[in-house]
Length: 88
Image 1 (cartoon, rainbow, N blue to C red):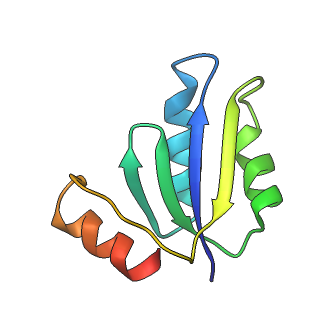
Image 2: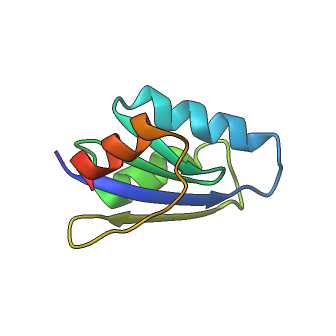
């Protein structure tokens, strides 16, 4: 299954929790920072964007399929770093 990097900027701060709950419901995920997550799903980028935009009118949502190259520093711990190594 493909891995996507999702960034979001909700227009209402409280809707950030709704977005993260939707991401978690999809299965395998890893928070990169407060508003950027990596997610493994069978959905397409368009389907994922549309799914996340429900109940989030006006939010900025960016979805890109990963798979070429990645680098990071200071993840939320070793578990997250290992997840990123495996899926990105």
